[in-house]
Image (cartoon, rainbow, N blue to C red; front, side):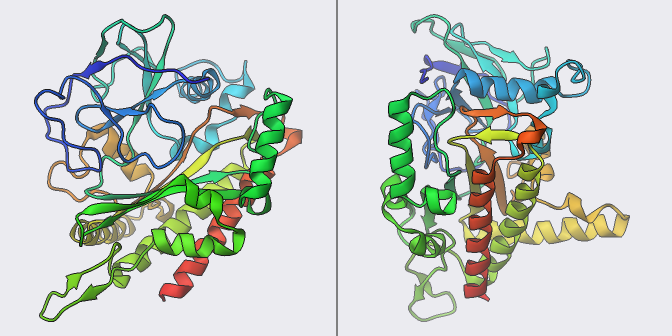
Length: 381
């Protein structure tokens, strides 16, 4: 079910937003959300707030129910003992974009806990669209980056949910067979990589991921995690392609590999069926910003080790969530994250009984992604 949102305005935070993939709004655009330009997969219709920190996404009922279930399982909310399904998705919480509430026709954010989050502000609509429409208000994972490189990997061997018509089931089964989904459990939906030489993104569309065979997946991963090519003489050779230096790319691939491996373990602990979901991988495409982010990450890790904190805290997820709430990352002179991994698109996700186990098709896709990341790392080292 696809819905649309009416024009809205955001009560933006006083802090100026960092440069992101979304275009900076002009004075005439500041009162309406902009089209989300960093979207590389999924359905259209996703908007970003004027400052780029929030996404406004058309809400399918099942996806809204997924986020409501996570919100209801928070401490102080509905007693999950009365409804075990509310806690079924708990292992995925840290991988899911922060959910601020829903945007109704009249345009006000309906918060998930009865209080208005300062990041969400008030979204005022013009009230001209049809009745009953809602949109999800989510944190924009691309917001902390200067030049976000973004990859959407569609997960699973089954691309339809149980409520689909027989015609759609046959169509999606055919699509899975004709792409990499059926054999590998994943498909490269689309990606963008910052090219400092041209000062624009090199965008690889959905058609690429649908056209390649399983044997070509490593080539696709190499295009996303690309090494820059430089030419010319002098102390600073001119960059002539997308990507970054190998010494910066290697720790990024290592970090993303660790995160996807951790995500795989959490998905294995979640009793669900997920059709059409994706893992979203983002990393900093600006070399200077990436170098600063990696240095800051190492320094933070050393501080935690010195204070005796658990090593597992350093996974690139919790820190970024805190930054989403405090609006600190990349906006007050501090570096943003070097990379982020997110699980997204839950329009066809449902909990199942524990005896049915996790979604093996999704796990197969994550295993394939892990293998591709290991292969890319071996090529770089």
